[in-house]
Length: 79
Image 1 (cartoon, rainbow, N blue to C red):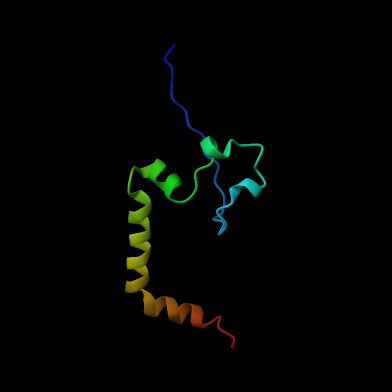
Image 2 (image 1 turned 45 degrees about the vertical axis):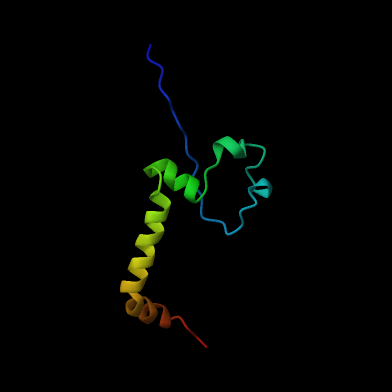
């Protein structure tokens, strides 16, 4: 029987806080070994530098699409 290295992932919405010790899953997961967030998560999936590349892609898209983004969200501005 061949041994296989298996990783499981738990996905959730991004939280602005980085204090995951208070997070609901604390006690259910070993936060040091079983929870990956932001840079650690994306670099785990795509290799070193993936998180930075993603941020750069979003920044570039935001710059290129600024007018369209402002126009779209301007429809919701009620001030």
